[in-house]
Image (tube, rainbow, N blue to C red; front, side, top):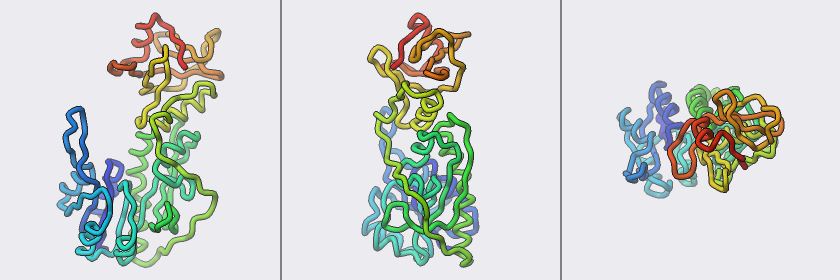
Length: 304
């Protein structure tokens, strides 16, 4: 089939590459405009734009899929549109322009976790089996008929960044099965069933860890907000970024919310367990080993 692809971040690149290598004809790629990155704020093409250039596929850059994008797509007479983490809505008349419409690879087991941050919210909720769903795009949010789905299991404490990297590659199987099924007419789609949840975008404040809960919940929260927007706690009313952690044994006689040096490691005691603060970043300083940070504070700190 003649396919137009829309996507932007690194997580969309495996899908673009898989389609390009599948025998289907990826005739054009839509991605968001170059964005300023780094301290010098240098305008940088998206990962999908770079991959498309490497593959020799024409690229259209737009932050909104309006009339200009629609006419650009129309010129390719595509049979199918595929969208993976583009970062914008596909509306009429573009939505109906491809002969087979548009399909979306979404990183959740729909209808659970519709919205912008499905993996992050699932991990925050303590879920370890994360789904991928390929569905027909409709104007309602993530509500179209399901074509294919699959799932992958992760260890508790797997960060959202690591989970998304894995799912981005894993999900190409479901995506290609959907495209092939539409091409040969074997797939039509089935309505979504079950309770829908909304996975709204995370804010910086979502990264604040609540240490009053159990250790499993705190670890799940950390996983869901790492690397973005980033997990943090407060020490002496200053933010401390928590870059890497892992589960640890509770230390007898140490109050919950207190970090101490134990066998050369920074251990944060919680109500029913503990976390090792493997790597942290104090306010205004570079990232460092958690034990080195704590030794610089005399080997103990109250963490809130």
